[in-house]
Length: 356
Ligand code: NCD
Ligand code: ZN
Image 1: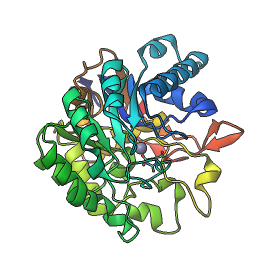
Image 2 (image 1 turned 90 degrees about the vertical axis):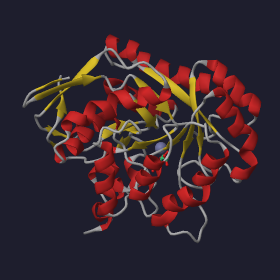
Image 3 (image 1 turned 30 degrees about the vertical axis):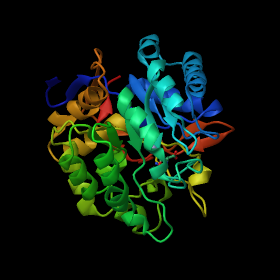
């Protein structure tokens, strides 16, 4: 890593949790992701979801086709490698897992408790019925990625992650001690502490919004729908702990943007969708967060080494350079069907940018 007051060159990052969507949306989301990231783990919550290898293969081809049609430069086109996930349902079979492990394109299996978030209606309704599938994941060393929130109506939205750790994840880990697990997009000090207390089989991704913001940003002075995502932003004390662990150099914590596009009108609505769009500006956002606590030297491990290590993949060979020179986040991007897409921190100025 070379560093002076103005430039920071790091190994090309990977995004271990992204929503690219499908169809015409890919024309926006794929070039944005490919500009910064080599490998991206593509979340499977399409409608209908990506449930088996055939569907994952077809989805991957649509992503790559969209990349080829885009104006992304040739070098980035050849580096971009979408890694696929299967959406675990009550009907996922051991055979599905065997085929995924043999496919070479499926990197992990994603578990959404039914009803937890956007497009999770087909998610798992009873974790206790998943024993054979978990055993197969363990056998084939395929990680289980968790949307870690309980969904019972009576559990407060701010407590859903902690309840998942206590009531669900602790049990999974006791029963399947060698299963590789990623708690996706952690939002609380409870989750950070929980992950720290486990073996190296258990890791976590952290989004830019959970490092930079807390629930005051979402709710004070008027509701800001572009800060609404799930799991929801928590209080500032949690944000501080997330920043601590992300910038600690501990390889259990790595980059997963959870960039989750919803058209502007669907977010700025009486019943706004959950998800922050960050793909195009994710690296400047993370750099801003790390720099805010004087830890820019810890950025590269988090963005470019620890995730690859966890997944047993080689670290990328190319590099990308960030500059300590301000950028203005666009107010919106064009999105399919003449819609617009408002990014996280639209119209704001970030102190870091990507060198052209
Ligand atoms: C994601 C989406 O829109 O697909 N939304 C979000 O708020 N994060 C789903 C998810 O990852 O929970
Ligand atoms: Zn997500």
